[in-house]
Length: 372
Image (cartoon, rainbow, N blue to C red; front, side):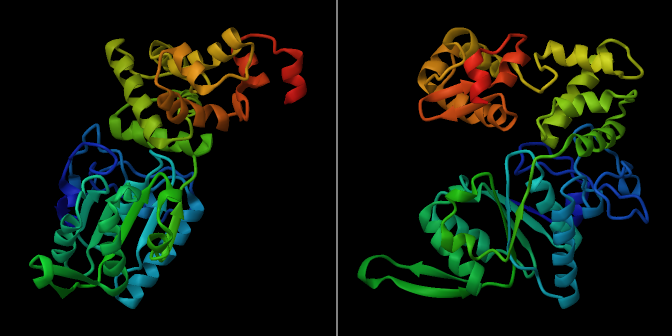
């Protein structure tokens, strides 16, 4: 568990995963209108230094993308501030890397309150959660990443805490045990999950606002990459940001990661300006093609097309062919391949589409054209 005030949150340069990364406050352009695709200032607030890893904005105006969600969240926070009460609990759902943790940090910063960060797997017993809840102050934000992985006992404790703002502390054991209710100050829980369907209905119903994050279109990713490049001190030539956005799978985290690798390429090759050719060469070294497919993605498609004539093929056979665990193929590769139309799942197995054949430079079979 991490306890952090708003001031400390602005000044720290901690690194880590999605649930623990903390970055400095980045100020938005003064007077900028509410528009998802505008550029925002990458300058730090009050002259604070900006490290290479500190790419996350700290105000809602500086958050690029998700325009409808931003408008809903802005209204939600403005109403809470006018009522002078902590806002209702917030659930953020969506695939990894789209900004759930960033938005949680923004909410705490916009409200000017401390935020405590933990995760579902880190809470192994109900007592762990009770200890966190009992130490919260009025108005604080409790951010629980991967909330769907909370233990059952901790979930039931959280039900009462979120609705009635109290926890029952058990004293003693056996027949002589007694329950002492402990009143909690009003606080806000922000839960983040990549698998909303795994949340129990009673827990999901206790969130007053549910934010669904969607994959980013290329235009929004271009603006995000341009802003991140300014923070990192990378000079991008015309079309470079577009090339990076095409390979980012609609995910800001991947876009920033690829930008850092392109920055490394530019440093090693003494490039002052990164053009489209440099982006292509750098990402070709990392085996990332024009559609964002990496080595494993291409291996899966080549196995279906080359070894199984386009399919259908079962998951176990496919995973054995590419030398990876079945779970890796199913959870890492397939979602993107299916979403982009390179592959479909059928009752008989996985089948490569005509788009997959064409991407590999092959002519699709006649029966594939008839199927799709």
